Length: 93
Image 1 (cartoon, rainbow, N blue to C red):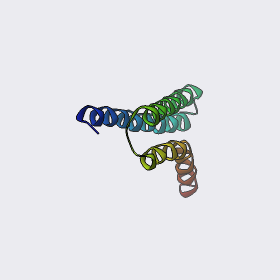
Image 2 (spheres, one colour):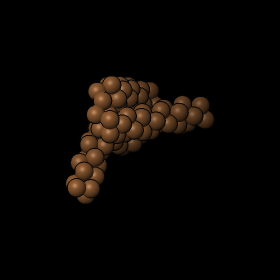
Image 3 (spheres, rainbow, N blue to C red):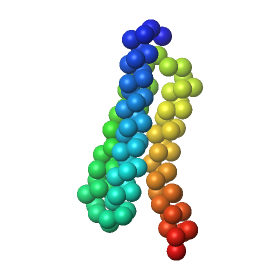
Image 4 (spheres, rainbow, N blue to C red):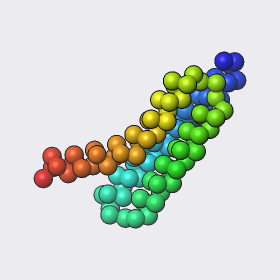
């Protein structure tokens, strides 16, 4: 992997993490305020995360195992805020 490829892959991975964080924060705001607009924003971030995942898989020279890890991480990201929110509701009743 050349230096440019490393920087390119690193930038895409940074966008991947930012999208996951944006999804989590907006999902939490949607639950706190019971507002569909925040949930729409959260879903938009999740969609952007999938686009970033596709770009990582298609255009970076990462090994197949790393690409699989990114895809699985993207799938898991959908459920993490929901599971944590339900757990928080459970322990704060």
